[in-house]
Image (cartoon, rainbow, N blue to C red; front, side, top):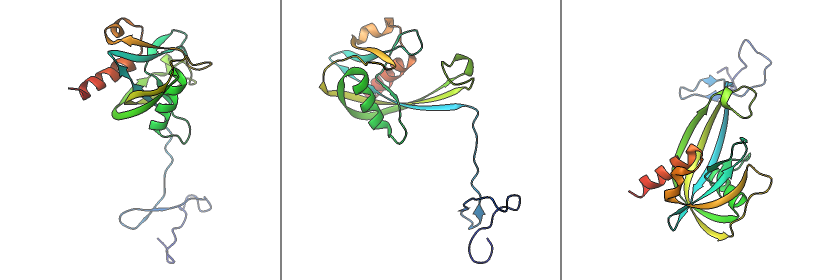
Length: 178
């Protein structure tokens, strides 16, 4: 660091606006922008089981309806618990209270299997909570990514056309109860 205590710009970009960070040794370190060649999506979901039945929402965005856990993507500036509660309400009509964080599922989707994304692969991080219904009435989402919400007996789940997120959520919930 030059005299006066202020870091100087790197020699290859003397007029570039940048802020230096100090590393542990007290030297100025220039932050680097790292461009990834994939998209990232973070979603938050609730596993809601009541009286031997699980609450699922029918996802229709792919054109092939499949059952999934209620939940979805975080909005800009939103935290995961708030997103899970909001999405559960939007997709099912119920207000919910989150329990424990069950786990974070990481899923990679190659570019050729994506619905949208301009030929880029997707890395989806799915944050899964246990949840309980605290109010509201069962209702279907209008003009969203799901079109129906329904309770299914746990024994029926294996026969459903469903996303792997359902199995992962139930597995995580089951391991919490053992």
